[in-house]
Length: 95
Image (cartoon, rainbow, N blue to C red):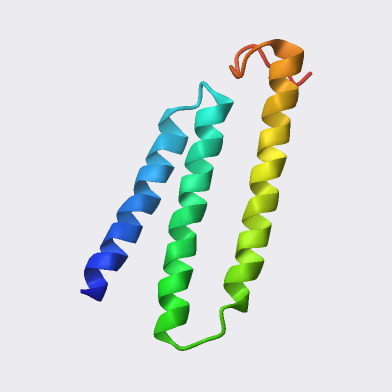
């Protein structure tokens, strides 16, 4: 039973990575795939820490950092849409 859960978490992680690598046109899709990867890592940490009967404070720290990462990505997305009008990477010039 536990191996099935770990297999599902691994499949979630790989699907998030495949979407991140293949859909590089829109910033929003890349941010959503990164959050999906973070969610699969959170599930993995939850299963691992509950298996070894460890305190869940590490999960709280992980959630705080992932929320900060999501807020930073969302603010970059909003500023990019306001300045360029869309979230395409082709219209965004770093120079």
